[in-house]
Length: 463
View: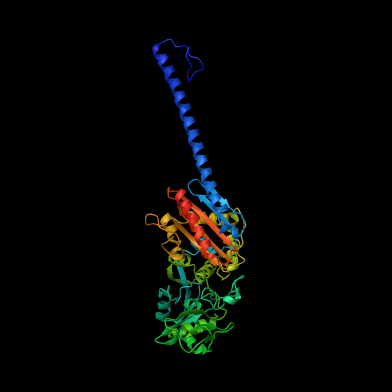
């Protein structure tokens, strides 16, 4: 009588049957050994993961820098589809320019492949045109001249129909005292020159672009060298000295209006433009496209451009609802996309200038996963983000691994806020999504950045 894996009892009456029984017993023995080895491997794997997570936990707990302020962290394994480590990942933080990642998703979903630079119709001998929120028109760095050339060369008479804008030029939570800084221009339906004036030393003389504003400069000597200061509620500028310092370049926002827009446009086109107030846009409009949406998004992400972010929100709103209503666009995104997050969030602008914005590290990771699924390839995805020691706002942070970056992340910086959210390629080849947020630190931004780099580099080396 021989025990067999296939039968409880087997009376072997022949050599062949005995051999078969022995083979079955060997199969069972081999299966048990393999099962044991698998369980052992899983146990070792689990132990290694526990040790890894414990070592990261220790990094956070023993960090003298991080213990001085509120911080949060979330790390997600893309391959295993699970969160592998977290610190305060469900706590709400002010995200600063990490808010632009939400604008990135919104634009990828609702702006299209190219930026509409102009909407127009032809009626008889007249060309009537509307703004689309496109921030690139006559922009010093981004203008492709496509819209400008179209308006300049058209044989039709030009009529501008200003859009009704239901919101103020500033968003809730913006600092009023930043009105004259180039990172906070007015938001409008048809921007021109980036809604800023460039002041520059040209052969010892102060010159303005557009030239229109040169008549609005007064000299009021001040203390501390040469500077340009805009009046709070009007487009007049004070120079603090008669002598312009060598190499001086400054950009100051101007107060936008439809009348000013037409004045500036006529000056550059050298053509008359008539304003058609209250003329509704018909359904048969055509578009002139200015540039690739992805190129504009890369510019916004790499250099954290607030103006581009806010105007892209207006363009999305224009295309979705035929109106410039950023609040309605944010509400739509919150209902359609952000409601899927584990944690509730609150957004009041598209750029991150508002201190009212509140998100969690976990919601940032979930947002990045949405974007990853939206973008076709990893190369295309990472191209949109600053790369450690290579590009954008991370060009001076991190080191390279074998000549290549291992972190791609959007940064966020305002007073007492610093954050990074993006993607990490571990030395093992595994891919991760992360969000690392810091709020309420006091006067030690450099130390906060260095500590984040230290921790993220450790994760790269050990994961």
